[in-house]
Image (cartoon, rainbow, N blue to C red; front, side, top):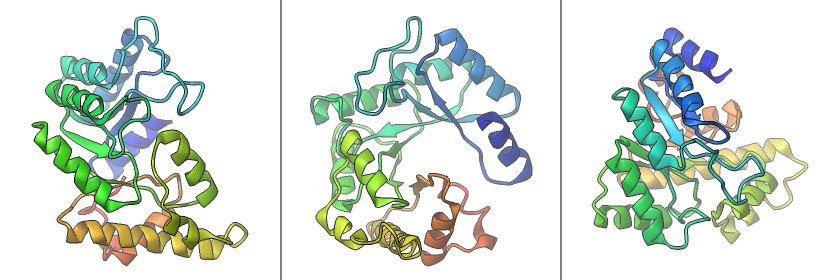
Length: 244
């Protein structure tokens, strides 16, 4: 299904399409075959992630026997096939399984050394965390773009639960914004759009120009957010790199 969708984006729009690729539960040969299939239909951009364990986010990760061990190895495998444009994951609050920031940033550096083009962050709700993270990676000699991942709060309860497992802090002010809205989806959607738009505009004021939206199949929320920040439907093709 992903391949069909990416192919439609590639052939029916002017938006640069990127395929989502993980190495969970597959051998290297199986992953490489998927890469070759994408390559054969003209895909040259990938979002390459290790992926979450089949047992769920936060559970111990065990590489598949004969598979790629982590995201850095997956990037190297992609580059061995072709000179792809590769986005990888980055973690402003560090990956929950990393013992410290130094270890976490060293993994990002391995991805970059293996050929990553840019990094897309895990979502966050405190823009200061993002700024401090970018400062850390720059000090470590990493100069690829660090694109902030923006999570519209489609369901506060679900986002809060996932955040707890993913190691992303949910500030008290955010919980207060959504308090009492569990049974009011229209107001919840309005608040979600406003919160995300405020976050984006604050990042724009700090000099950020590209964003990655975790849509969770809620195109309505992202449409509203784009409208609030000044992107209109006739700008969609030009904004292709700003929304995903």
